[in-house]
Length: 188
Image (cartoon, rainbow, N blue to C red; front, side, top):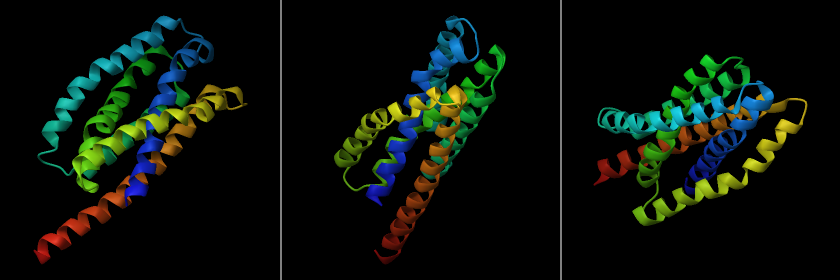
């Protein structure tokens, strides 16, 4: 389970890093909009992440971390697919709500879920931090998709596919871990 959850989070971390890095070029070159709108979109997403983190923290008392993480991945997939088809400023800005929810789930719920699945909080936290760094390494090939006939929308479509794969893996590993915890509690 440890290798599976690490690979899954590397994939979703890569999608976040790649789309953040390519957004300015996508807005200015792909959509033909002033760079100002990319800055506003990134600022809006960053500003919305804080209330999203608080909201997710409150929801963690009612729903499992796994459920919240999977919802976060679904928000990321929705954001990436939406960005592949965005054509105007207002849709670009509206999609940042999904982006903020995805990033908040990834950074807040993700670490807590990691600690729930992997024994040893220091080990789990260290591995989680490294998923971001390794994910950043994978951004190069993702961003390179912009130079293909698929262009910038292709980067977002590839990220949607990786987020789906990562989310599915998180779901499988998370369910197995929850099952193991239930079995150990029933034995003890």
